[in-house]
Length: 200
Image 1: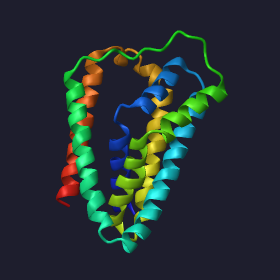
Image 2 (image 1 turned 90 degrees about the vertical axis):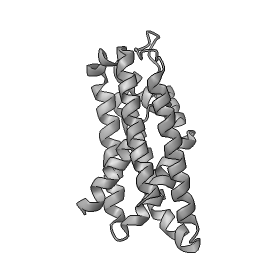
Image 3 (image 1 turned 30 degrees about the vertical axis):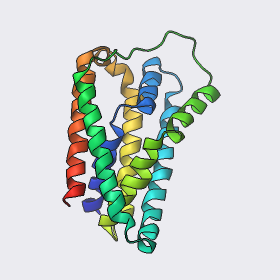
């Protein structure tokens, strides 16, 4: 089980680490300490649903369409290489520091609506969970459940750590250097995954 659980965990974690609208929103909510549990739960459960759909559905689709797996594998590698390049470029540029807003707190309904929009209206979420994780799960025939559980665990661990740990990161993310280092690490992770997809 661990031979599939940990690859799923670390692959999902590598994908989710990329700084985007959803992660920035969770981080901001954590910095503001507003509706943190609900926001983290919505993000993690949404990821779990998409991961399950990708792992369960991709196998059926790949059996019916044998050409689908290599197309998505190479397409996923291209996407990751592009993402890595963007992360490296971002690491070389200046960033504005992320600080909590001073505006009045939004209600729970409005906050969750925004969170759902960041999650379900983001095409990268589908590429990461349904397409990429679904594609790679085909390499773990007979151990797909463990792979999916690892990926889901990473999502829950990441979002709750980010949301509730945000206040501890306040001094760190006030620095542009911290964002540059994180972007560089994300770029390296994406590059490594892409290489593994191209040369399994």
